[in-house]
Image 1 (cartoon, rainbow over the protein chains, first blue to last red):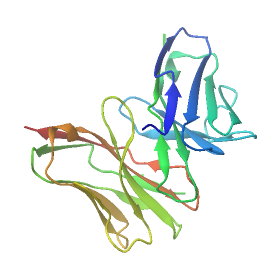
Image 2 (cartoon, rainbow over the protein chains, first blue to last red):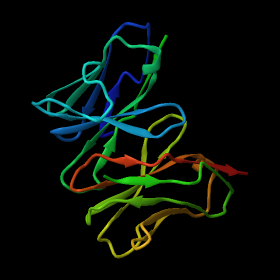
Image 3 (cartoon, rainbow over the protein chains, first blue to last red):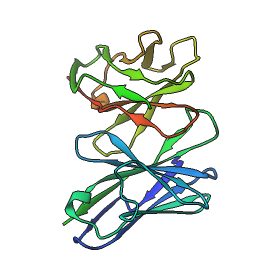
Length: 116
Length: 114
C-alpha cells in the first residue's frame, strides 16, 4: 500500500491565489520530508527540506516567502504556494526518508498545479 | 555536492529485447546510494532498484539489474525482456554524505516498440 500520500492530486487556481499541498507519511513518523518540483519534461529538483518542529531548509534559488513549508507533526508536511503565478505551474512531489538507510526513500504520488 | 548525468534523452527498444540506460555519477563521499526510478505518464515515482556504494555485487530486482562500475562511476540500468508497460521516463538518482535527500539526473525516455 501507499506509504506517502499527497493531497490534492491536482489543482487549478487563478493567478494571485494561494494553494496548499499536503504530504502525509502513512506508515511511520517522519522528522524530515522533502519537497521537489518538476517542470514539464524536466527532472525533479529539490526545493526544500521540511523539518518537524523547526524551520524548513530551502535550496538555493527557492523563495522561502513564496513557498511556505510547515511540518507541524511527524506525519504531515504542507507546502503553500503563496500568490501563485503561471510560472509556478508544475508538478510538486514530496518524499519521506525512513531511518538511516539510503534505500528507504518513499515518494508521494505528486500534485499537479496549474495557475491560470 | 553530487551530480548525476544521463546522456540519453530518448531510447527505443523492441518488445522482449534488453535495453541499457546509462548513468554516471559524481560525488566526493565514500558512502552513497544509487537509485533508479520509473516515472510513467501519471507522474508517480516508482522505485526500481538500489545499489549501495559498498555493495560488492550488482543489484538485481526481477527484470531490472544495475551494472555498477565504481571505478568508472557508472550505474547503468539494464532492463531485460522489455514490455510495452516499460515505456516511461527513467531517472537515475543518488544520495550521499549521510543525507536522505535525492539528487536526480535529467532522465531518459524509454519507448518500447511492439
